[in-house]
Image (cartoon, rainbow, N blue to C red; front, side):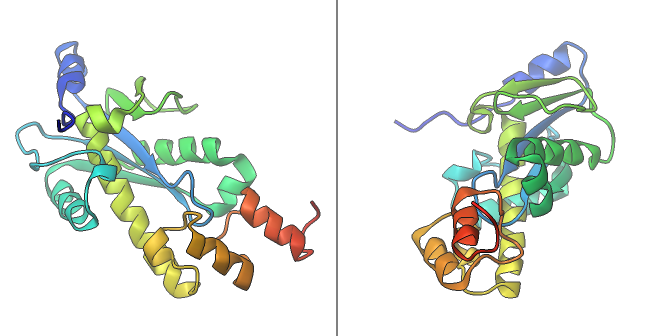
Length: 212
């Protein structure tokens, strides 16, 4: 039996309660060994919804790209990023929250409330917010944000793959696949690797670049 698609019920409830502008926020890139973490904030127009919006993880890459392009024409979008340096200095959770705040700030106008995928609220968010565990599977604006963020980050990783070839980032987006881990051992870490992440840290220790 197919799983239910995300819908606008939470956004509709908030709008009925007086929050005229509701943004969905999601991130991508918490788990990879390389590259930035990216977040997107999306304000949907209920009258102009691209058909087929769903959790980005359930969509084929070509379909994600189509939907992301459609969303850029009919929704308000903000994208925020936290760099590898910020991930290593802050930790991945705080860097993810920073990317979410930046995505919200990148929207063309302020919102009344944000719906955020996950179970923790970023500190310093510029508006009231609610967390939704599994939000990309249930809340349409969060699903839209997951698509926008995934497509944008994949493109960044494809560009980084040209600068730092051999790790397969155009295929694995920086995640710790077998291909990536073997290349990491063979080539050593690149400037785009997250040095605070254990597999990268361990190889740097083996190379004598840092202390255990």
